[in-house]
Amino acid sequence: MKLRTKICLTTAIAMLVMSQSFSAVMLHISQKERIRSMNSYEQNLFDEKERDLEQSIRGIVFDSLSVEMQDRVIQDGSRNYLGMGYAVYRDNQEIYNLSPYEFGIRQDVIGQSSGSEGNGDNRDIYGLREVLELEQSDGYIEKKVGGRNLLIQGSRINQQGGEKATYIVWHFVDVTKLYEEVERTFLFGLGVALLLTAILTAGLIGLIHTLLKPLYLLQNMSNQVAEGQYGKRVPVVRMDEIGEISHSFNLMVEKVEEHIQELSDSNQRQKQLIGSLAHELKTPMTALIGYSDALLKMKLSPEQKERSLNYIGSECRRLSGLSAKMLELTGLYQGASDLDIKEVSVRQFVEKVCDLMESRFHTKKLVVRTKLPDEGVRWRMDEDLLTSLLMNLADNAYKASDTGGHIGIEADADSLVVWDEGIGIPKEEVNRITEAFYMVDKSRAKADGGAGLGLALCREIAQIHGGELLIESEYGKGTKVTLHFHKLVTT
Image 1 (cartoon, rainbow, N blue to C red):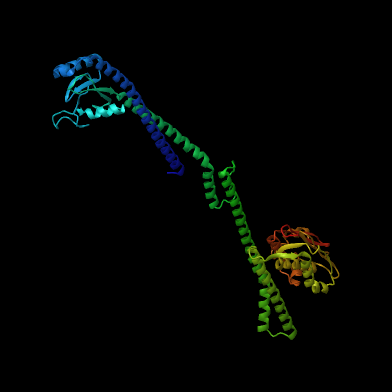
Image 2: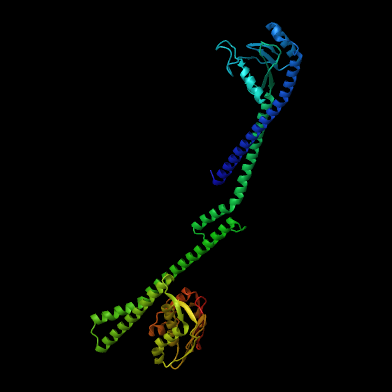
């Protein structure tokens, strides 16, 4: 059973029970009020008839009459003044009864059978004690006899004389119709309540289904996302709690899609990197094997041996540098979780890199022009990584420049620029220059000890710091590399 059905059934049953309990209580109260009202009305009639009866026998001295004559007087008076629904008892004997009911009477027994078991006498007994109680409380007795609900009233007849018998008048009012009416009202109310409950339950199920429809859609979308369909989104059509959940779900899926894409891109770059590295290692390793075999198996002149050893040493150093850059680049692909972020003065940072590169620039007698901000401008960054970035860009500018050329390093609050007046990059090559192992002039790059990883490192460092690498170049005129760091400025 689904949750919405459980909620609806529980609500409907609870409402049905509460409504019928309330109805039963109210009907019971109403029934008691109507019985009390009926008793009051009948009691007034009873009292009036009893007074008429007592008035008719007031001049008669009962102790001068025989018992039979006393009974006859009471019978005649009862017949004339009481009528239907009344019964008169003297001691244990019924002397007048125009009601359809028979009651024995005994002064010392209350509410017990007057007949012995098995003799068919099932008459209820009411005696003087009950009459006295009724007279004191103006109350009544409710009794069910033969399937009929009776309201019973009683009183003593006052007569003149000394020693006289006690006559008790009982008045019986049939209130069965009242009970039946209450029962019909309850059953009718129960039927209406059941019908309304069924309608309410159906309405609640439909309403809850409508309200929960976005959750069902959310469940379906969750299953699709679990199957790898990260482009799915839940339509947000309302801004209640469910709409907020849908919006949060879309944000979560968007972030998951971004992370999955980043992992996929990182994995693809690493695959390309490994493939490029294998290709890059193949040629020098073949040459190293050749030179080492020649040294071991061939008789070479001292000049040839020296040339072979110099080549082996040069290639080993280049491969060592290549290995170091590969490790650095692979670490960058893993993300920025281990960055050592701190505030650094931009001016001091650039001047430090210029000092490190000064001896290299001096070998070509290059003129370095700098344009730096005040000391107060600071960036939040990983100083080691950005130092590696700036040194790579400066080294590329050095390699591209001729002797006596000009190099520029400029920085401000949110950007870093390195330019040169060197050989430049062909237009069709600019978009690929940041790919790992991509080199415009392979022979020149290898002669300078390059491996095509410098700009790939710069791009990764820029992205980790929330920056963007822009390369502008014109073949034969020079290159300008601009980095926009939107998240580094602190002052």
